[in-house]
Image (cartoon, rainbow over all chains, first blue to last red; front, side):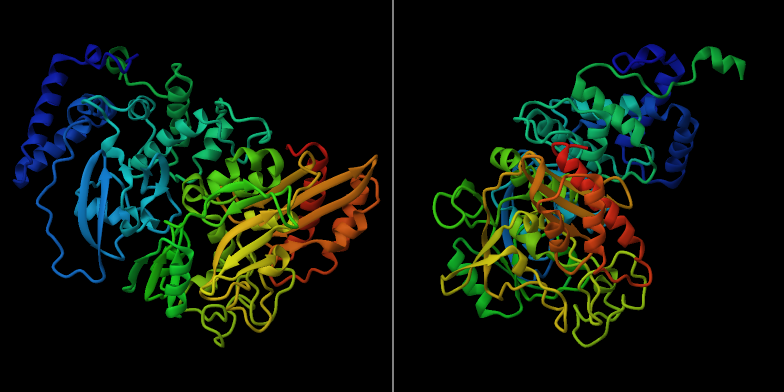
Length: 268
Length: 335
């Protein structure tokens, strides 16, 4: 069985080469239709090893420099313009926004941080969850105008020095997603949850809320209750819970899935 | 969303003045309800007065006045911080449980105590602007009265409105006999007993509560009590978490030897305001804390209930929920 620390060990030379090419082509930002199609076909071929690919990409791409702003087109006319100065992933930002602009739209449309997702846009799904001044909040129900002097952390800001945040690595290990749309919100939410548990914050399912605050060991029931603001339409909940359990307990949790090994492949 | 002017205040006075100067201005605190309603075009303010910089988020013991010995929570305190404040957890675990039964962790980190009181109903006919709704547009009729009304009121509704108040926190505050402190542009502070803060719909369902335009909820005072070890908040809903209540019960019991000295009971999800179950409370005073008495008290309260077409189930559900909440309160407030 593969472990997350040594993904290379299970790869054949051919696979390594193929992954290498994939990475290479992605970085060149292919636009040519044929090239893109070929690339797509390769990915399909590798679908069975998709998770493996993610782990390969992990360090190079997902933890890479997604902060580089593209040349954002500035709005021509701003109605009820408000200036907002705040920190996003540690970097100071100052921009003029329409008073109606939510934090989510500001991140996605003005700061090119498209990791935070717009699911329902009504505070019901949690896909837009970000961390503001250490607390998990919904960026779709936060006005950018009200974020002055605040510090925002998005999914793009969790990896440090090219290393994935342990929660990101754990979601990969446990396959805590299918389509991945809710994942940035799930991970931001889970990262903040670790702090809440350390602070001894209680939940609706905590048996006795009168007990003095001390770090709480989260049961599966506690994790599920505390993550209920993040909906996963694919229903990857068991794996999401495993991923969080592993980071919270700092002990390995068994994976629910295995890659096909060489022996099984030869039997097919 | 329609365009609006964004104004930020740093004092209660300036906020109250900005609000008073514009009848179409609304307060922006946590924003979790008002922004959602603006996106839906249900609320159409042309100005939002951001009061988040006001210094109104402190939780502190009350050292003078009628509620001396109790605790004051700031109107701008976040729901999550209030629920987890050591003074609240120790002295008012009922409030902690009720707050934590509502919404999600993210929303509780954003939503304020004052905003929790002032949130609007989640009646789908109120939210859907193509439907009639007397609360949203007085005089247009009530879509829910003859529509799908499974989630709606069984107590105190009128022909104009059958919506319910969505809060969990407020159900606990009703049982805790809280007092709402509000301040307007004149600087005058009003104290409103919790039972009088929210309204029944009557002929004016557009008015949820007795807060006047221009007033800000500065704090909520909770008097001292002797039932911290015998209280429980029970929430019954369609899914295990993150859903509005079908029925919820805030229950607290103060014992006198082996008998009940007094019980406090409030119900959520059943009326236009948190429904204080006075009938049941009166019955329980002086009785033994038995399942039989709990059942009788609950049935007595439910006699006043009047179901709509789809929510008749709430009467038996509410009766059982009262019995279970009282039982768990007697068990030290745990499930």
